[in-house]
Image (tube, rainbow, N blue to C red):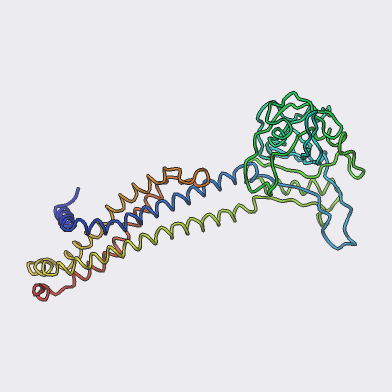
Length: 412
């Protein structure tokens, strides 16, 4: 509960502010805009961080990509290009911490029906292909382990193929030809999410078939490596296991390819987790930048508070002299004017927070701009307003407390 002197100080501060309501309102306006701006900027930064963290925790961000590399070293020392194989993939899939592992093998072929044909990316898939490539089954079923073992002629279609080959009609059960080989459509895939991972390509223009069927019926055998695969995609259960999985991958491939630890690898491993810290640093920089942009408005409002308080001191010079002549100390005068400045900023801060919160609840930018409420951000914005009141209110208050009582009483 406020002490009597403290209550009197607040009452006097309120009274002084209410003597010039329009001037007080205009002074508050700068702080209100500043606090609202700080809060909204922080909410935008929080929303951006949320989106980044969601993307970093998704399957794509937990994926390690492995592919052959025959370009290392001098030309005379390069070894023949050697593909990856199914035996390595089975061993990788059994590693602890691996959530999914798939082998990529694809060729472009025409997809043919009685009515039309369409050139598409034919991918040799397995049971982990959809998850490892951030795709979701829409209808029917995906490629199973049984399909691979039996080399079934079944196909799962992407949305672009459905649109251009079947006119958007329900395709499950329909017959198609890929090249000259007949296939039965058993499933469809949802539209692929838009992301930076597609390199400008149409992620929906594909047909999934069992990898064994694609290899034996369409691509043909490989004289270098039986059961060849062009690339591995390995998804870890979480970010923490990716470095260990990367080391295990290196050991497995070196052993299967007859390489010692001293040999230069003829494969390359790309681990996305190495970029996680870079994303985090970028996000922190973005948050600081957004806060600074909002703080500029708050500082401008603080300058307005200081100017108005200096005007108030000039107008009330005689009052200050009278108070000091009847016993008021310099500290009492300092406290009075500092309380008025703080009161302006605190009230403005509360109003600014309410406005900022209201803005943050609106879907102003759709899915591309998300603002997230955070108690910490609210306290930071409100604390910034109080700090502005302390800093910009101190100079006028100090000036008032240093007035000479005799000179102040002579003031007109």
